[in-house]
Image (cartoon, rainbow, N blue to C red; front, top):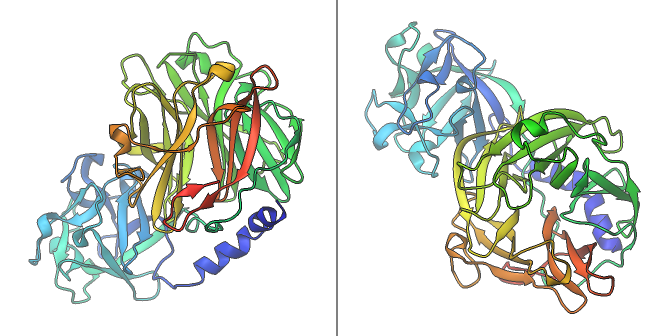
Length: 471
């Protein structure tokens, strides 16, 4: 227990060490990109979300189509993903000729979607495409709105010089404190333990948990072992919840998700009724959990009976570059994923499918560890005491968008999933899990010695020598 607490306390120094390993031309973040020649911004024409949509220039208007998520790649280049479409800037059709067009396409890591960014000083840069070796160029030195942007052999003209203005930050890459083949460590919890669908966070020496219940009920601990109850975030609910879920009782909130990002505490949560796809995910945030100055950040995403997936069970995940994504969903067509705008913390871009399974799947959690993304889900049915069939399963992928394969190589979209925890004679139906960093797993299970009451369980999450999770 003490070693885990020290691990979490070392988070800040670990992140500092990671970020100091390399120097880059620019920091990862959200930027506008202006032509030195025209002063106009690089945008996706017409704010199109389509593959192949053209990249051109336009006067600044504040639209997300003029903002780019710029992150370094493993080979020293950068990807530039549009903050409106979620698609990456690329040289179309692997063109290597002068005048080759620049457009957007779903990011898949090809060389034509990677750019070398070179610092000329004074906030002036030129970009070289990895595939073609040609520079990003305002073709024809045009000053017109909508003028085309393509590539040309680099010669240093103002039409090839770009000014980057940072408009949003992203965090450093996820920190991985986990060890391999450690001894099983199930924490000896005491105090306020009645819990369902917990999320866990750590902040300045205090552990926090929020859970399903009236108005987003929580609890806190100084040592992670003994837990005390905390006041609900919204003790009177919020009026807008019924706009999206008319049958909601106005108070019952499901499966919250707590994460700290860009210096703020963010908490996603679900509004729904049992067995329904009429659901909504909401968002609240605070300067810190301890301050408790929670503001209502409103709707994130909602579903109706016309959708084949369900907007519940949100989980905020950071990719290997520190960019945020939201994984969510249950039953029906299963688990979904969308990019998150790091400025608004709301989703944008394409909807991806990660996992599906007949008989029940929900409560997704994704973490990044040593080259893999791991998807944890709860299979089966909850909420029936010791007759609950919940069990925690997992798979992994080298891409956050999947495919997620289990230990036998079965895709989780095709019913795959290796079992981490199926419970025992005392603890039935474990699930609703959340993972802090890569080494602490929290979940609920139904206590067979207390009439099937759902209670909090916390364990050290270990990893075997092949990179698979275990207690």
